[in-house]
Image 1 (cartoon, rainbow, N blue to C red):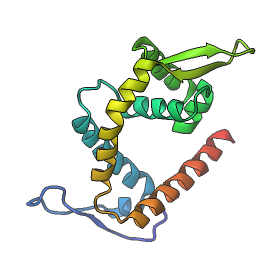
Image 2 (image 1 turned 90 degrees about the vertical axis):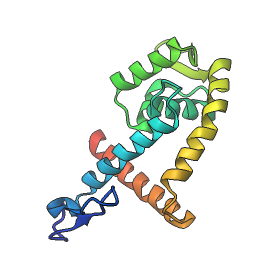
Image 3 (image 1 turned 60 degrees about the vertical axis):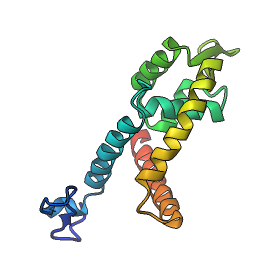
Image 4 (image 1 turned 180 degrees about the vertical axis):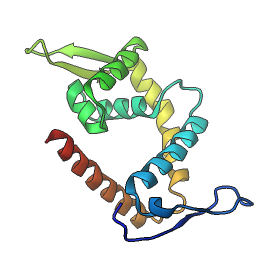
Length: 165
């Protein structure tokens, strides 16, 4: 927290509920990101309940679709997951036969590819994900949405550099 704002209030989520004074949290980037992420996560789960998938798994599949042959470590870094978490997510996707791993010449490196079932699954999920994205950004103009994505990417890159140090 930078201390630029001494206080601030959050808009009430429910129409009849009073706004809550945030105090020092009003200037906390981490707080605002976590609070937003919690609601986005809930909305995603309501929008896509039948899939038994979590957001991260669909993101992994979308990255693999766009970058066939990417290795597991690169996928993990792209979505901000540590090695054990990405390994578990990949194992779940493999168990569901949505992703497959193929060995390269270096047997320690395994490349990821969508299976035909994985491609079919994404064809069904992407329209729902797209609708979710439209709904959560409904209060933003296209320019604001693009700016927000660029700013969040800068924060992600900054934190990734801290973790690599």
